[in-house]
Amino acid sequence: MTIKEAVERRILELCDKNKIAVNNLANISGIAPSTLYSMLNEKSKNPGVVSIKKICDGLDISIREFFDSDLFDDLEQEIK
Image 1 (cartoon, rainbow, N blue to C red):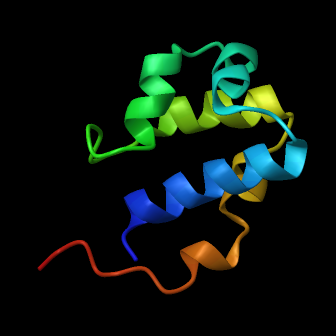
Image 2: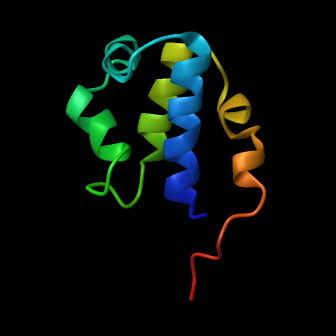
């Protein structure tokens, strides 16, 4: 799994856990829904750390909590 795929899955996992829609997550995080949706599809190859931090702020979690998931344990090497 790539880091982009892991971030995507983690965002969806957190939405499910908090019982909120992706659009609502964008609103409470102060980011445009189009930005969040692009992070969740093929448009964005590199989800930005600032956007991830805003998502964390919206969910009232730390960056450490965001990345504290098994999803990030066995990522593919990015340099090939």
